[in-house]
Length: 467
Image 1 (cartoon, one colour):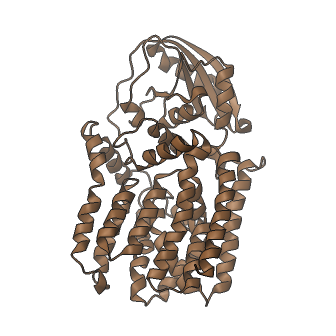
Image 2: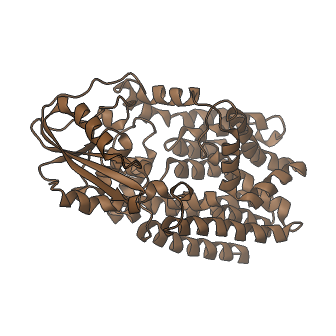
Image 3: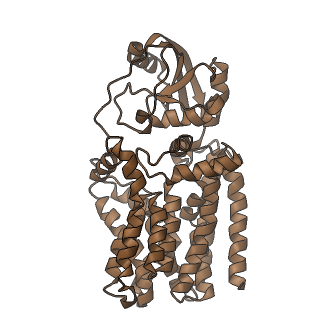
């Protein structure tokens, strides 16, 4: 094993230990999406409302081994965070970069905010990105690449971007002109079968939901989206990536370059409709090879500066999570904070997990209640606000006659409005509604409004036609 490999593995091991502590024992709880994916993992299926089944299967595996804890949910992310830089190192070597260039390509990704995010959060992006990077690393062995895209698409269908970019590469990379490209593509498309099977019995909900998300509707957020892309890589690495395109002449690097170049499509679209910050994240890892190639040795000092800037950005984010003086909107982990306070609070107000149930009118709340509620029983979704459908819409409802504890999680402390609003909306579904109170979370940055709803009548609001 070369010295560069040993040093890389050492840094990745140190990073994994630090993130194991920060992700499992720091003040950073699960995000609503992570809690949702954990809830899916408690009910294994061939597909789910908004995503393929891969993330649920991943969390089922890790929690089966490590328990239904923060570490159990996020252990798969640690594996992703360790494996992905190793794959980028392999990719860099396969396109004839030196050991040093491969090392810096992998290290830049590992310590970028994107690399830290993928190492910490249980997300569908992780599995899709790792297998997509493996597919790129082993091209043009397209049967093998197709197998990796098959696995990546079980997490997120964005992995299929490999095929249009591989087809484009036929014009400038003669080595890619193989009939096996079609065979690999057909193999990877088998990853759609689990979701297709689930959707046949569930109104084709996934496709309706994805179609609605793609069509957008919200106004553009060009500058916010661009800023988020710079932050994902860190300003230094983003600048080095952009500069590398002006010097790009090596044909074997062009396939790697095609992926970050495709992020331009998202950037242009963000001028017209709202784009989420992570939507283009899967395109950047192959591009990190360009950073190693371009910056070593000619811009080596900026590689060192880039690492320190990236580490400082991540360290600042973790410190902000627990620093009491940081404004709520500037706290990058504001959506992961305060939920652990719900567990003793629900016990204190009388919730009995053996006889009662928890529910909310948002899938995010139902997900948080499922993980943080005493006993970790699945909470329910009662759509009294007319929200779009979600995975909870396709699961069973509470038993008639049970007492439910309804929870609203908001930032506002307008107790009188929330009390009157939800007492009116919940009244048709229970014999009696008692407002328990408003309780501060995260030092008053968030509020939990609790209602005891006695004797569930067995009826539910009409399903909306929104997906």
